[in-house]
Amino acid sequence: MNVRSTKHSAMTRWGSSLAIVGVTVTAIAAATALAFWDAGHPAQTNSGRATGLTLAHVKRGTLTVKVTGGGTLAGTPAPLATGTRMVGTATDLPAVGTVVDQGQVIYRIDNQPVILLYGNTPVFRAFGPGMTVGQDLVQLEQDLIQLGYGQPYGLLANGDFNFSDEQAVRAFNKAEGLPSGDQLALGAVLFEPGPVVVAADSVGLGASVAAGTAVVSLEMDTPEATMQLSSAQASGITAGTPALVTLSSPSEILNGKVSSVVPSSGSNVNVTVSLNNPPASLSLAQRSVFVEFDVQTLPNVYIVPVSALVATVGGQYALQEALGGGRSTLIAVSVGALDNIDGLAQVSGPQLRAGLPVESAQ
Image (tube, rainbow, N blue to C red; front, top):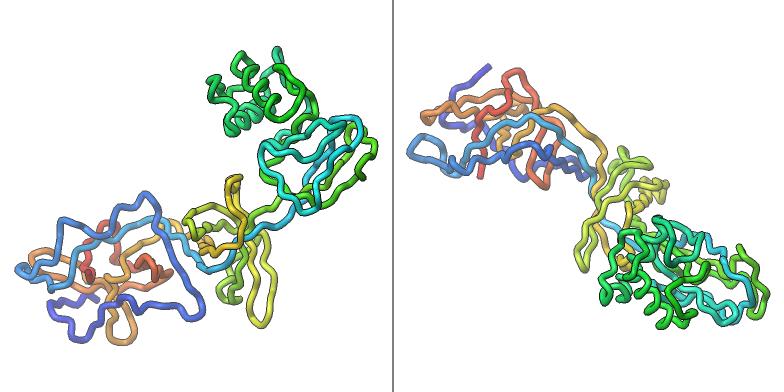
């Protein structure tokens, strides 16, 4: 039933006091939705609209319910394939725990260095004039550019081994103590996705090394965010749940997904989030993070600002429809998912329609 009103002594506008006990819930309207607040309709006391109210509109779209939590980011060791393509004697091995970065020597065979470069495609051939296009060549070109050997020659990461590649390889070989020339021998470099940590020396110093031998055992620190949530908070979180990870100091936002949910002490659970394609430059020193989990998607629902909700007698809720000419009327609604951070609410009711003008507290 509609109730005509210009004064609402029995009503309370529902604002920042909204909460769901035990669970922090946020929701984000679909990106296609327009802004709720109409900048062209400020509070107008001369038209009968109460001071402190503005005009909003009911929107129909998708609401994504989220759970938020704070945690820490750190590196988790993961083993890597490290078989060498060189043959000879191990003449220099790294100490266990050594961190090897792009362009640095991992170990030496017959005093020839094996150098770490970044890439996901393993080494399977030598690099030089006449070679065919391949992702391994693109990786090499990217590394040479990043290490400063490509710029003087206009090198492009296009997979075409041309004069610029020849000159960049010559400069790289000279600087790294590799055989001179415009070719990079098979096994002179080892491609890994990012910085590596030496977990063990798999052969002894002076040992004979055959092709395919794992000279050292390498690990890569995989960045993971961990946090503890209550069982109520984690009720909608499972392995594979999408997550948005906000890093602090410096601020950075990365996408990820839940890799594990493990019961902890009492009614708590430990949640681990793996990052999707983390940049190689990402520092893995322990740091604080804020994580948002997508736990529920509500398509095709009505969405309003929380500040447009009015609490009526009997614990019910309504919206104050703006009729124009300073007049308004209350229409009853049911309230669903809430966003206490961005101030959005899911509502339902037979009188709702997209674009319905409603009054909202500023």
